[in-house]
Amino acid sequence: MLDANKEKQVLVVDDEKSICEIVKAYLQKNGYSVFQALSGEKAVEIIKENKIDLVLTDIKMPGMNGVDLLKWIKKYNNSLPVIMTTGFPTLDTAIEALKLGAYDYLTKPFHLEEVVEKISRAIQTRQLEEDNLLFSKLVSLHEVTKELSSTHILDELYNRFLNYSIKVSRSNGGSLLFFDESLQLKIVLASSEPYNETFWQLPVFGAASRRAIDKGESLIIDSGKECISKEIPQLPEFIQSYIVFPLKTPKKIIGILNLVRAQNTVSFSKLDLELINVLASQASISIENARLYQNIRENYLKTVRGFALAVEAKDKYTHGHSENVMKFTVVLAKHLGLEGKDIEQIKYAGLLHDVGKIGVDEAILNKPGKLTPKEFDQIKKHPELGSRILENVPFFESLLPLIKHHHEFYNGNGYPSGLAGEDIPYGARILSVADAFEAMTSNRPYRKSLSHEVAVNIIKKEKGKQFDPEIAEAFLEVVKALDKL
Image: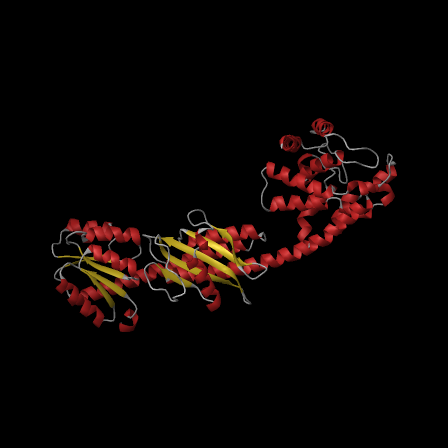
């Protein structure tokens, strides 16, 4: 019994000092650490400043009585068990206390053995509830970590991680810091006001972050308590509790997670620490993997971008065409409501859509006159050739249908597959309009560029024929908006 109770802290509240002393002495004999308060107001101060595991309080006290204290406790920390005592028992009083969330009820005079038994049972019950809560949260964390690992887009991953951390820990605000190329910690994401980037630049957070990195350990700092290091300043007065986590992979520390709770809330607990440690460990690995993925993808992009430049080097008239198409497709895709991965997909498809022209004879690409049917057949091969060039690169798998089918017509008269309507991939239909407009408004070996007005009229005329009518209409809205800039 003594060992089990060694770290448990009980607060005894009673306006009769003699009762407090007797109960305190007996509880200490049974291994508990005991605080005492002669009023509800003093009890509030002790609860705010210490980790209390149970409150034993009299109901009838001057000033803040036991029922008022119980109401405050349930708002401050609903999981803190409270046992009520009174020398004037009534059924109504007992029912009210239990309804308000009291764990149990004792009438004076009580046996001290009964007090110890009820306290022990209440703390055990709370521990079981915390274990069940931890289990349920760990199950939820399993789902969260699966979702974190489902994206390789770093900004999206940062947002998910910070939002989940704030939610799981019931924090009021948070921030993420990572090392830049010069190995300096930089804030990459912060929650909304008042816990914005300016807030996280306060000296206390910088000092605590440095210590967490140096020690490789998380750190909890509570308002009004002496910090573990004199080098760390006091928290702002409106912050109750602050926790800092080093974000670690198996090989190194990559950054810092900061979380705070505002005044008049409960401080972070060991349970919060355990939960966020699980989440932070998984998120750190996901972030490192996403960075690795991004680096590999960027290397592939540099290589394939070289292909695009090689194509344009063969055809002096199309210099910058792919870059311009990419810009048009991104603006149009956003206007149509696409986001995240879909925007990224359409962006790179725009850049690489003509990569297959590297396999087309340069003389055909630069022919100043009209192409023969045989020459045009060679041109028509470039969408399929482009998709074949990229098909063995895993990062570009999702781009292949867009590149292959960006010359399909909505009425089915396009190439290479003669697809029509909704059978044409949505991204390819977006790319088709952007590609056609950019081509029409650029110089070609067989003609000079058309004016915007002429190109717009052609797109209007081809709605429902060459182009998806809804996408074409959206593109015309985009062009009109750009013309006004």
